[in-house]
Length: 367
Image 1 (cartoon, rainbow, N blue to C red):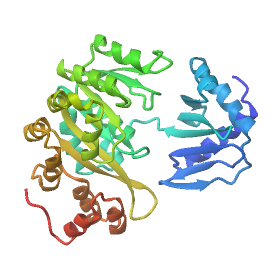
Image 2: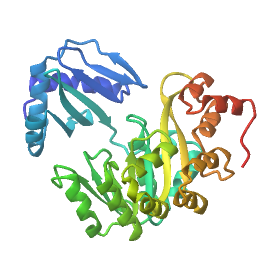
Image 3: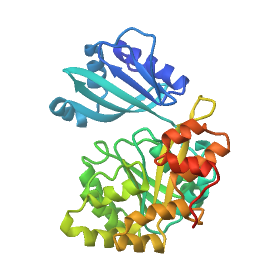
Image 4: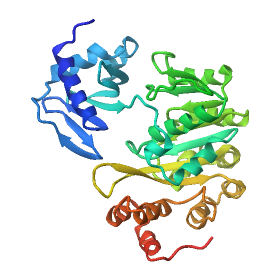
């Protein structure tokens, strides 16, 4: 068994404390004590400051060899770290003002179910989307909104219910899946394939039914997703966007102005749905519960996208009689009425608090 160096032991102790306390993230800034994010709130840890040499020694010791040049040349790097007896973490190391900082996110070893995530009535919408035979599904939200967990729960449901060949492209791998009814191939950038671009180019030759792409990061990735969708594959990915309206705007930003008509045709033909998510503090203040805005891209939605009438889609979300498509306000209303979150927090996280206030008074937009 290899000897654990003092700087690694110190950081492992911090990670152990974090995992035992249910913390989502650990933040290390040189010459400061560790900080943790618990239920969305940042808190300092009662410990000695971690020096810059200690932080840098941890990175140099644990960054995979293939990523070492990136750390040396660019001063920032992402990689996965496994602390023995503690768990796995997604690591981002970087420099600020000439000093080393590290952010570690705990990757839970057990793949979550819809029920464990507390998705409630949202589960039916997600199951319907999971059964799409092809197309693109996008899970959207800000950093730390639970996108990865929701996407993992979707793959978990598919694994338990459908016989699919699933290829994932991740940077790094977060949840590890065990084959049940489905067969998984999980590729980690830097370890299994040198670059994201090479993995994307190769994926269609690997005979997948479902392709998971860690993040829809650029036009090339999105065009590959469209190509896969058009040839009978289901592509599931994430994107940094707060709402369905924002998500649609982000997709069209991949294309220059002179290609917008072509973009409308491609997106309307391949899109199967958006799942946008926020994490809201629970009424008890001891955790957070997901609130969702979900758009199932039916014939009406696809036609609106094709005709460039994206602004009408929000009206469908607010007034839809289809229980598989609904706005954030509808889900926030449900959570407030169920006593899961407070009215104050619901209004705070609502993209349209005035309308939510009307909903709580019994006033709704008709279908």
